Image (cartoon, rainbow, N blue to C red; front, side, top):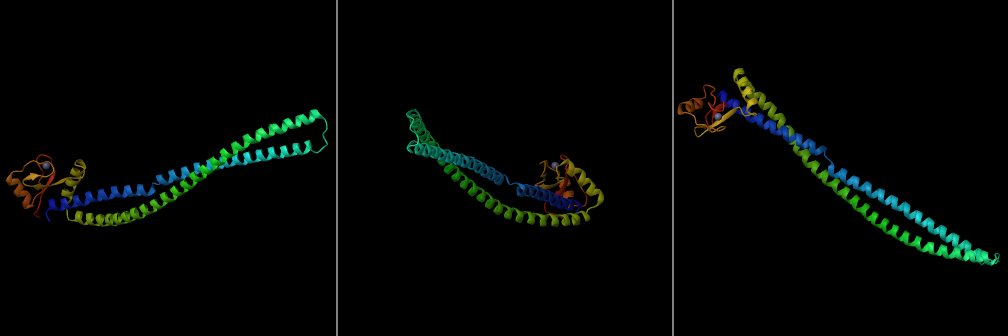
Length: 236
Ligand SMILES: [Zn+2]
């Protein structure tokens, strides 16, 4: 294999290596990302908080109603017990009973509203729980797929490292140094194919003589326009 071809092979391996690294980073980030679940959990927590508050209000409403009823019962019993005979006191007690009755109507109305709200919050909570379960199931499925891809890419990375070492072994130090310098300047693409008499990277035509020398593969030639090392498409 000519030096140019060996370098071109090394470049292909290294470009693929770069792509594999990039994909692995993406997958690692995707595996760590549980945004949908975090959102579903936050929603669930909010729904739980609302239900808790409204349940407290419901209990308070029930207690107030019970206290109202107890007070009315006690006043009523006292009024008709025969123990109270003072007309002024009896009138006051009747007024109080009427007031308690009015208050009871209000309390019942408020309690019904709170009970409605509790029911709605319970429905919200059920929905939030369902959403969280769905998010967790989706994540588990995605993660299984991503882990499979990650394992395949990791295996490919190991193979590429071995292949790169083998490729480097067949390249002269000076050629490799030249390639490394150029690769830095050319975003990893230090070697260009010749296609139809042109440098495939920059499109500039080569003289027939130069193209023949590249095809011959005895020496390392560069494109006179972009400076990349040249390799013929088909020959070794
Ligand atoms: Zn060029």
